[in-house]
Amino acid sequence: MPTMVVLATTAVPDHLRGALSRWTTEVVPGIFVGSVSARVRDELWEATSAVVGNGAAVLVHPAPTEQGYAIRTAGARRRVPADFDGLTLIRMTAAPPRELVME
Image (cartoon, rainbow, N blue to C red; front, side, top):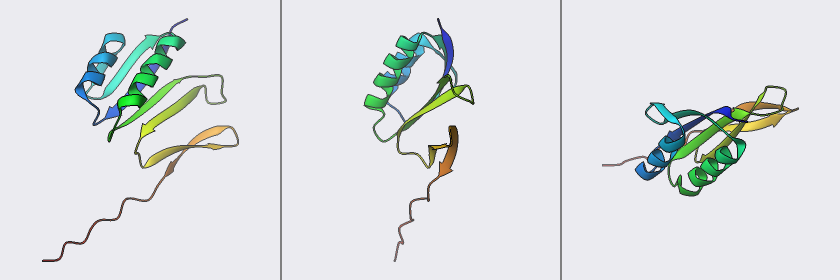
């Protein structure tokens, strides 16, 4: 049974965006929304996480949890999902230190 998925990408290769557009609609740059089966969702996520490189991706899809959805992430992100007694919360990591430039 198809269910709605939202996949947000940042700085991913163009060929990945094209592949995602075959199954979903890119509603704004980098945000893909679609109604796909669990098998297609998992295949899209495998393809996304395999080529994300220096970019980042987040997948949100329905799941039998207290919140009604699950979050998957790939790539380097400051916001990291964390399980807190069965609830998925977002933990912020420290910003990378800025390099000092001396002239």
